[in-house]
Amino acid sequence: MVKLNTKHAGVHPKGTLSLIDLLKSVKQRPDYPKVGAMALFIGVVRGETKRGGSVRRLELEAYEKKADEVLERICKDLQSKKGIIDAQIHHFTGDFEIGEDLVYVLVAGGHRQDVFPALQEAVEHYKKEAPVFKKEYIKDKEGNIKSYWVSEHETEQ
Image (tube, rainbow, N blue to C red; front, side):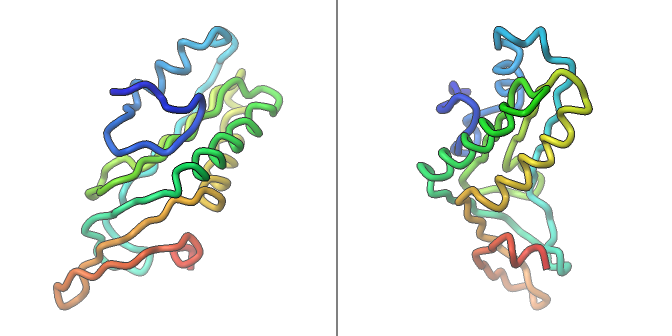
């Protein structure tokens, strides 16, 4: 695996950051002894759409420079909250099969009461703000594979 290309956040090609790398980066912090809880969100490729369609695979792209800026800002905002020691968001790009990891969001803090709300806030913000684009490849009822770019607003219906 490679070293993180940003301090707390960023967009990475699939396969360049492992969950172990992420946990090590938190545990190597000089202020790690203050950590009493870590919460982790792992976004994975779901095999069906909200409307019951069969997802075959996903393709993710990003406006990397802007996405890195947005993800870093979200993390810095979270780290300014009382009780939060570290916040990281790492989103992957490339081609993904069902069940593969798409994003890691980690929040470390003094207590569990600190980290759970911050983790949810981090996920909600990156999904709305980061310019990461998802193309779904769906198998229709006739067995044909169709693809389309998905916006978060469309998937929430």
